[in-house]
Length: 301
Image (cartoon, rainbow, N blue to C red; front, side, top):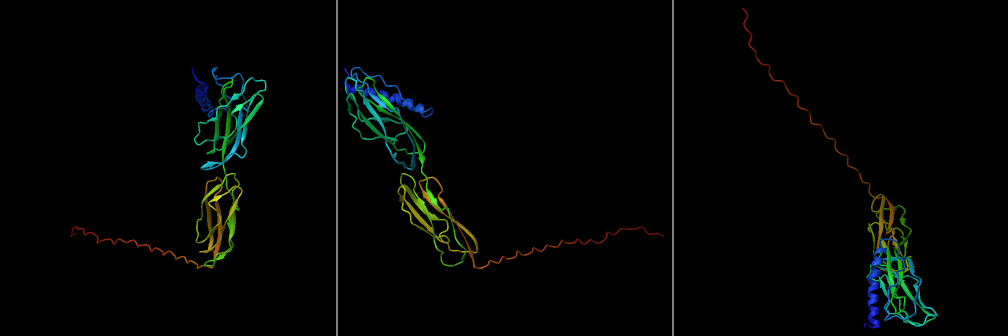
């Protein structure tokens, strides 16, 4: 005869297999609906029913900055309860499982809780956070296995990963006309702001032409949420006329990552264009006709 723990473990494995098939189908079709409870064994059940609410948790969009997302700001809760008129307490099998075909790593994380034994007329809450690792839709099922008469319960978990963006202001810098060979002009700055709820990684900030547009990088390698930093640039003309460049920011966010730079130089040496020599046509040789051929004429008498 199976023990209560063994029976519940078998039930849990069967539920995981069935729910995983259901979830895989949902990834290519409409959103998940609440699965029907799996049949429970009369050898391990009690007469009480377990109520799980709500049947679906939708976490909406959550910012992702590769390689990892950020845990959702506010965990979403589900409530496990046993009605007051039920005859016996219900024992919850811990830890609660999340069946997620996109893991690892885990996308939906069950927080520590005290939902162990729920007496009639009482309830407890289970908190879940969503932490996507990519910019796409995520689906999973939270499985609640217990010795309740209505068997294994499930909650559909839905969330979307959204690529975080970087904020740069202004998007370009223009410098006044400068003398060629003069000292650098006064610097101008741009502000980089991390408006995401997760830290932003800055790998490098470079100038396309540091000899003409030298920069001063005041940004850390990791920019915390809501923090900002500045990058300054100045201009040294190396020739007459318009000169353009750019600052490139290499980071793990979406959005613009280049800052346009422009200036103009004057007073430098004037380049004299060498005239292209005119090609003299080669005279065409005139063919001189040769001597006329001699012909013999008859002698007239």
